[in-house]
Image 1 (cartoon, rainbow, N blue to C red):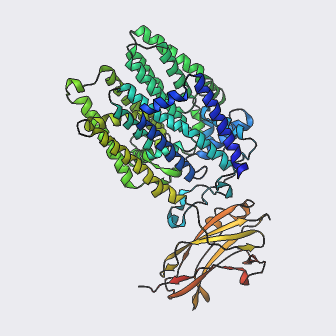
Image 2 (cartoon, rainbow, N blue to C red):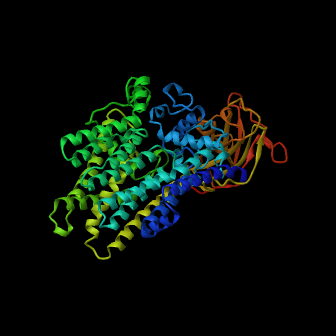
Length: 636
């Protein structure tokens, strides 16, 4: 174990040392950091809780089970190995070919980490549609899992799983910085209200989907961070009487980096141009500053879009994307897709839909966060439209901040709708770049109601604790059960050296006639190659003779492993395969005690594979009799 852990720990320590040296050169001493944290204890507590919850998401979720995570990882592997960007011709190296067309900044950062891990197995070899970590108590949700995971998934991880979890660990910092800049944006815009800034940070930090995605390998994390930084600089510019060249250059660099991260960052360009126009003294200055802003963006990100133009014929590679992406589906704005599917799917996956959008949250959580958003929106409308006493009114710059944040939400929503006129895969995470804006506006709206009440800070604390509770509840109610490891019964049987039955799980031991008995089998492939596709038999045998079957058989389920989706010829050496069967108990099965027999055979001939026990003795009828007995209850 020490050898497995030492390499990642050494990398983490080196990164920590470099960060410490960088902070020292920047004049940020530990003493100053502690002083800063002392003044902002609520924010520090939120950041600590956020990091812990995100790490919990990362630890529970098996490698590559997040949206498109395997494609993002393969993109990084390609850069780390070949030291160049992939093209659509490299589809043999990246399974999700459309990800090749994503801007490269996030993947270059990941490639740096993977290069430090060299040598390790960078060949991603996963098969889809089943997972080692599905709890049999929740077997109805087995489709929550997309991949088959082997023993390398068990902590402290090996190979690809280790690299993936290390990337998740390092990139958690991006989400933490997003929460920090959300706080800084609110504090900069409304410095008189500390509770508002803390509330905005908490709303951003405890949205379940945001904490989930922040613990995964996904370029949305960097895109959201850069957007939160852009919002902060936009607010700083709006609060100043005039635009300083330093702030404009810093904003331009951030937007340029966003353009190198994800196309969703495009909304920052018109947003920044509006701010430049508002803060410029005249049209001539506005034109000069706008040209400078666009020039810096072009210097930072223009090379990538020129590359697309040369390779694919247009800067956004939209033509080639539409030709290779299976989700392309052209439609009109009046299509029922938008009314019936788009908006509900966007909302649910913005609040929380774990795994590869396959583990939804309870409705109560969607309703709770919906009430939070509606309450904040009503408070914001009241603040903007209703007359207020002079001491509670907004300054002109604060009104500009609110309008710019609202404009950012409108821009990204409109661009998302336009995008889905040709595309059918709505995901709320694509709206995360406006999460800081949403958090600040909702917190501002809620503060309108809370400031009129006594014990304002107590109410803010209750609200934040409620969001924290809902986030944790979603983990333990939805995520943990879906990926909870099996605890198989202790037994072993060798099938001629081809594979070994190392355990099983039954969902229950008492059934009624007509019920389904759910059985999970654990196979471990041996070193001997399997060149045939075998069929698994699972038979429920009773004490009474069944005239219909001409035997003692009262229920069975025979099929190739994983319902035929993962035949034995594809199994990898030493791989653990988890195989489930629903054995239907016959409606006329008499009450009594039953046993289950398991084995494999060739479908063409019906010949069973010889089965041997742990002492090497061949078992009768080449079958494994499971240890537990099943009680069939009288039919009512």
